[in-house]
Picture 1 (cartoon, rainbow, N blue to C red):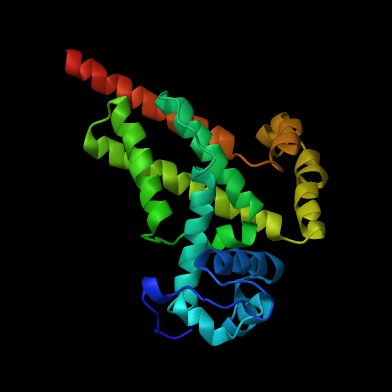
Picture 2 (spheres, helix red, strand yellow):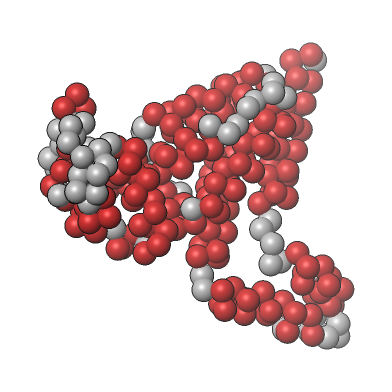
Length: 239
């Protein structure tokens, strides 16, 4: 795509496309998500997207300046899908845990798009809403602003990193995933205690645990550290 774009007020297509649908930013993003998951981001082009929508590819410039602009909108939609399912309760630790797990699950539901969006900053409505909401939870718990930003940063980066890692694994061919999982059983579980005492002692746990995502455990460790830090802050205020 080029750098052309039509003002928001003039974007709506008044006549249906050849496929009988009226174009909208939401429809384009949904279609782009589907194409990314089916064919990968490298296959996403104006021509392919126009064909999938039954529309002239040039009509997409009414909504997005270029392909990267569209990818940012896709990333923002993934954030929005998570936020729409999240209902904070007022318990900061439980709320962050719930949000983190939902964000991670959302990434696994759209693994190829999640890998692409994990390192981008969209500056769009859903991302802004997420930043505001998470900071609100952390500041509401009583963390001073510098600490609140550190925890926000660690929380989001941890979730995005695990989402990208686990999504990349899911996107692998099933045979490759099965082969990776089998290495723990076929190689590590057979190492002798004489040469690898720590691996041998924990082998059965490695076989059971390593094929699964460690994100829930990592998230709990992060939140436990945050809770301990909050206790320190409160103790200092009382002292």
